[in-house]
Each structure stands twice: as structure tokens, then as C-alpha cells.
Amino acid sequence: MKTVQTTVATRRTPEDVYAYLADFTHQAEWRFDVVTSELISGEPGQVGARYLQRVRPGRKESESEVELTEADRPSEVAFRTLDRGPVTVRGAWHIRSAPSGTEVVCDVAIETKGVLKLFEPLMGPQLRKIAARYESDLSERLNA
Image (cartoon, rainbow, N blue to C red; front, side):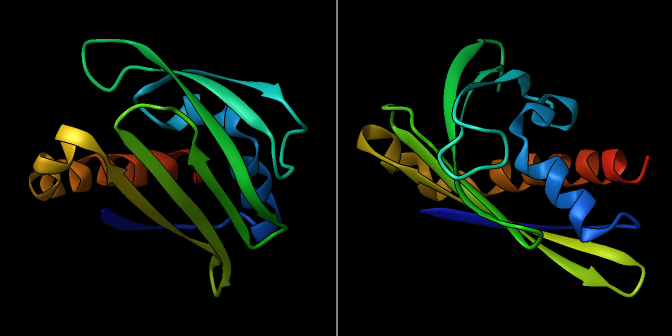
């Protein structure tokens, strides 16, 4: 399993940040590899809400289903992918008050299966590069 952590600071309130992150339809606004993200079951911001995302991590576009697994207003939003492929992603945004507004710490874990597990030790640099871009783009979005 590979893990990565990023941190974003914003002047927005924890409640505003929570509302934005808990509705995964917003992910297409700041995640470069998400083309669309639509709610397919449940209620936005509620545990069990599921989203179908069209993703383009490279040249090929595919679908991914993501489920909201924790929703502790206004401090935490957690998720997991539900795809049956060789990669499972779990993560959480921890939202905290800070002197100048809010700090968002994102923890993500990627677990591989099958043949892909052999390449897991080599995934660190690419994962950090993707996480850094997410961090930058989310910061830009929250501070616009």
C-alpha cells in the first residue's frame, strides 16, 4: 500500500470547506483527471452517497465509482473507490480551524492487487506528483 498526504490552507470557514468537499460533483472543478462526477445514489454529503466519475488519468478515459464513507460535519470527509479493478483508493480530508481560516489535510492510500502489486514500490514518485497537483488545484479553487 502506498500513502500520500497533502495540506491546503484557505481563508474559508471549515463549514464552507466541508460543504465543498463533501459534494463530490465538485471534484471535476479541481481534479485534473476527473472529467465528470455525478451523484448516482444517496444524498450529497451523506454517508453512502455514490458518485460515478469519468476519469482520464492518462490518454484513456474510464469510469470509476466513489463512495462517501464518512461525513463528520465540519471536520472530516472520507471516501473509497468501489471499482473491481487492481487498484483501490481510500482517503480522507481532515478539516481544521487555523488562525488564518482553515487547514485541510488529505490522506490517501492506494492499494494494488495482482500483477500491479509488483509495481507498487515504483509508484511513489508518480503518486506524489499527482497529489501535489491536486493540492495546488484545490488550494487555487478554495482561495479563488
